[in-house]
Amino acid sequence: MKNILLIFIILSGTFCENMNAQEGFRFLKQTKKRERIKFRLINNLIVIPLEINNKKLSFILDSGVSKTILFNISQNDSIGLKDVKKVQLQGLGNGESIAALISKNNKVSINNLESSNETIYVILKDYFDLSSRMGTTIHGIIGYNVLKNFIVKTNYNTKKIDFYNPKTYQYKKCRKCETFPIHFYRKKPYINVQIQLDTVGYKLTDVKLLVDSGGSDALWLFEGTKENIKTPIRFFSDILGEGLSGTIYGNRSRVPKVKLNSFELENPTVSFLDSISTKNARNYKGRNGSIGAGILNRFIVWFDYPNKKLTLKKNRSLKRDFNYNMSGLEVVYDGKQLIKEKETISFTDAFKRKVNSNNSVSFISSFSFKFKPSFKISSVVKGSPADKAGLLKNDFISRINGKPIYEYTLGQIMQEFQRKDRAKIKMTIKRYGKKMKFEFRLEKKI
Image (cartoon, rainbow, N blue to C red; front, side, top):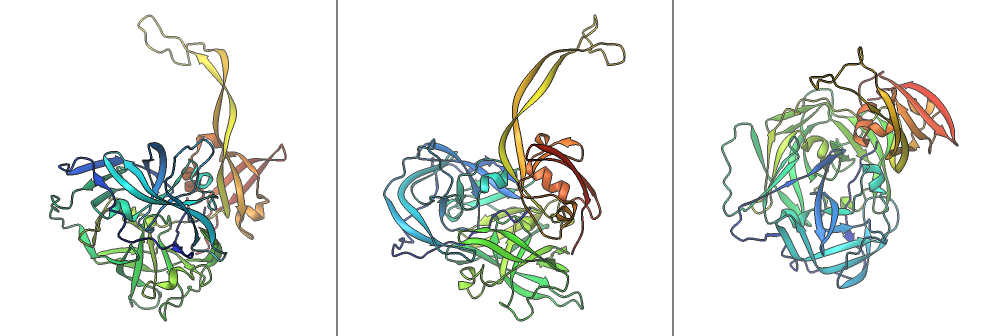
């Protein structure tokens, strides 16, 4: 599966937002010191619950965006947006700018955090089809405004975020931590790290990377921003994701090492983006790429915007191998399917102990019908193992390795495609109502 999301937004219309107009989020009680929020982690991305004008929604927390963006509203979503104007937005991708709305003075709340005058950009069409790629309904993205007034501790293992009052929070001494100064450009956070780009020798290159919790990959690098940043000899071309202005293309590869002060991560996957897709992102000349959730999720992360610093504490995932989809398949959620299941009655003995199958009889009492998730193939990379096996776009998946598809999440499907080189994948699909079986082995290209 491709990188789920990385968006770079600028205004290309005549409307210009007052950069100081928004106060951002605050504790509802001024004396409060901490607010804890539980989140869902889907494909490395943080999904949090929030409310816009008292309407409950699901948003991605994305440190790589400066705007609050709403892009998945239906006729059933009555949000009641205020003070609406038309604008044009331009982002990553090689297409044209798109029409959008800007709405001011909205109330947005996350548990006991609230912004009473939030400006929201409304994209009228879901260009990313993000909900189907995530396997759950995603209504939008939020970043800078919810991060800027707090010290925000993100724990990927426990799936909890703590928002602290910067006036009362005190850092504990931590020998397993590293702290980085944050440089902001257009409300986006950048840090300096070092990357070993060549397998010959041990030279490290200093790079400035956007800290992007909304990008599911480990690293993105821009060729040409520094003389020695270029795609290694071993790579394969791929569609890397979707941006506001269209599809994002590039090359997938690996680099020998990324060094974050004392933390060293070996052989991380990296995507080298083409210059057309990243034209707008390159407006900041000092930027060399992005560090995404594929690396961030190996740490406990403190976003400290008030003090302009980022702190990382390693977790048990630090040394985990970096993998990628080796199948060539892009799989998306395709709604619900009606599944027929049998319900059985089992018996207990006189002591109310459950009788095992060797000395009991179970009777099928009835069948029940339940709606379960359905998945289909949205694209097949040409020349990939899945392509060679004969799988096609729009094939509906019934089983993977003998397990019914409705027992998987999208994240678990991705794990199957990232297991190891030469791992066998067996798939049963439906094509025009006909059931077909396929088999192939994952192929490590880099």
